[in-house]
Image 1 (cartoon, rainbow, N blue to C red):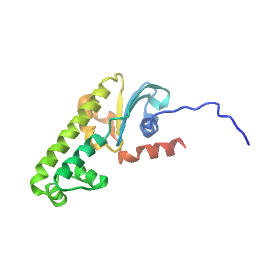
Image 2: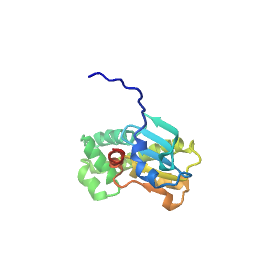
Image 3: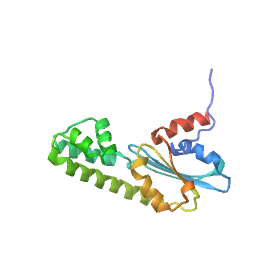
Image 4: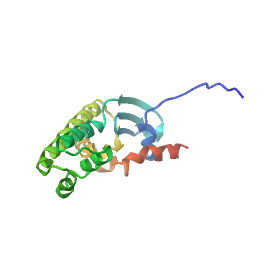
Length: 184
């Protein structure tokens, strides 16, 4: 059997990932969907109930890897060559001194690793906020993707939206999967 594909529409991951919020909005509202993944940042501005997509932005070189790569190097200097999973766990547990001391081989390097983590998150946050600043006219925002917990508070503060209009997805790294399931 031969068939012809007549039309293909490609959209960034952020759109299906934010669909649950879009469906709840009035058509007069719009949502800024910020998807910060491991290696990419995708931002989409979508009208309520998915009636239209007004703007899409993507940066294929901006993601959480900006933090993990720097931390991995800092850990290597601390005699702690480790997996990407363990680097992520160190970043997640960066406020737990006992965890860090237990997982970084050189106890004298813990403060340096923490400094690298914090500086890297700050650099990542600054770049994400710069990208977001170019968007205007949205009434709601949702932050998704594995990097959401690192940048969400700074985004919330910058946007100044009402608390009920700013959402950080529960288990943000699974928002895309849930959205694709909803779409069918």
